[in-house]
Image (cartoon, rainbow, N blue to C red; front, side, top):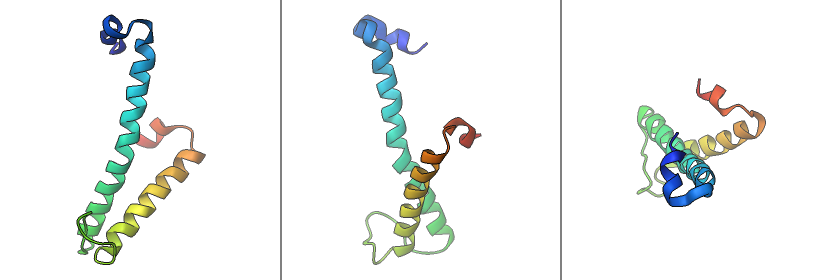
Length: 87
């Protein structure tokens, strides 16, 4: 239904514009989710965290960030049902 709002502006290309926006927001969400999970775990472990610290000062945070990012990519390559993963 949301693509209907774009039809007066984009015309027949509205569905493609809506799909591009939807995919783009998903691509932006992946690093945010990996970083927020890393912050939570690093804080729970009582270690330094944050992008304002060098990797040598917040090693656990950056390791968790890498594991989360790479793990997410691997899971998405082998599992074709992302909605099932959310549920």
